[in-house]
Amino acid sequence: MGSNPSPLPQPETEAGAEGLAALLAGPADAVVALDFDGTLADIVADPEQARAHPAARPALAALAPHLGSLVVITGRPAAVAVEYGGFADVPGLERLVVLGHYGAERWDAATGTLHTPPPHPGVAAARDELPAVLDRFAPGQDVWTEEKGQAFAVHTRRASDPEAAFAALRAPLRDLATRHGLLLEPGRMVLELRPPGMDKGVALTAYVRETGARTVLYAGDDLGDLPAYDAVEALRAEGRAGLLVSSGTSIGELTARADLRLADPEAVAGFLAALADTLAHDRA
Image (cartoon, rainbow, N blue to C red; front, side):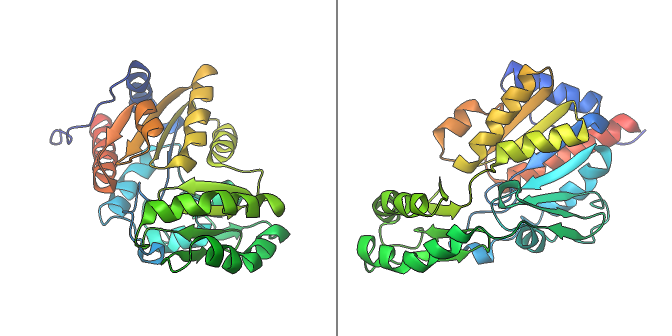
């Protein structure tokens, strides 16, 4: 018999405890779904410098073989998340799926293929108007635009007053999005303009139905993860088990609804490693 597994953090709610128990009892019928930035990777001033926490990939590789499915759902382009996560050609992650652009894109580790929709014309049109909006409503502010291909995001984290810049830009960027048939997705000191019709809840629900999973764990840290929380609660209402995990977030609604609150991506990686350890011990 092997050594005892690492201590596994326990949910604070009855529904979360039931979700964790169901996952441990039937991991082959479970989907573990994870956000990337703020959950697997620390939030950094320059999003292009974000990388998965060093402990995240080994934890995922240890956990994935026990599960029905492991999926990363992110607002980033799928290919960028794969690169920044270091997810390609990793032993143990042969069946990993990455859903990018909130589920509009899909990368499958099993085949290495990337499926992406045609670009929404409103993205290019809004991008052309963006400099004038920034000059008018955030003059002299060190805001930074992240190009995402299917979308773009304006970050205010590097501004002299990040919260003031965020507040000043929120309404005009919403107007810009509306004029071009796009959605404005606010986050932590970031405002993203993207096509409608897809969010993390839609993506997660479709993926759970595709896999036939009876249990779903979702971990996230920002406003864009709230639709996935809604999806897990709806799936619970259908009779599935669910576990909601938050990662070091200041988003009050997210932490209030989470069954298990973890401090940061390092703690998330530790939880995933402990979960893998427990499942391996149970099988021994």
